[in-house]
Image (tube, helix red, strand yellow):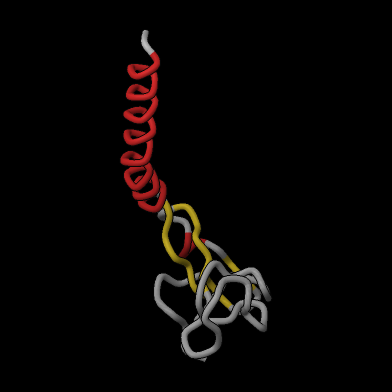
Length: 92
């Protein structure tokens, strides 16, 4: 292999890896769902509607508008001291 061929092959391999990354992320996200009301204080995966705007910022355990990703199909089976997990935000 010439030097030019090696560079072209490496560039092509990097481009293919870059293109498949979104597909892998979508597959992984498809296997999970947002589950509200189960996150412990500071352990939410993303925003709590009207309370915070970033992951890890929930102020109380089991905040009804804070969510965590869980394996698809398991959310509503998760029991907390305040009730079961929910696929929709829980109003306080």
